[in-house]
Image (tube, rainbow, N blue to C red):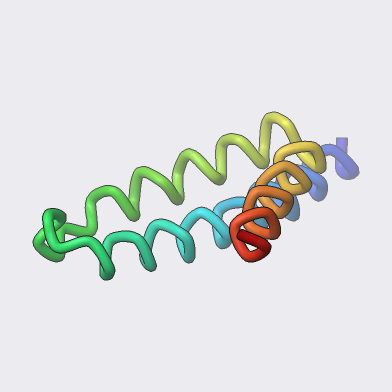
Length: 72
């Protein structure tokens, strides 16, 4: 049980941090959000949930998407 809880906290937290950073950059760059940070909160919660449910797979998928975006 402790291993599952620790894995959930680590992967959920990591995905939440990535989702927060990505959504924060998007919100500050796009003028039609008018500095409304509600999407940042929702993206962070979705990242936390995805990391908690899917674990390492979600973190690897998100990292791959970010690397693909850098290579474009």
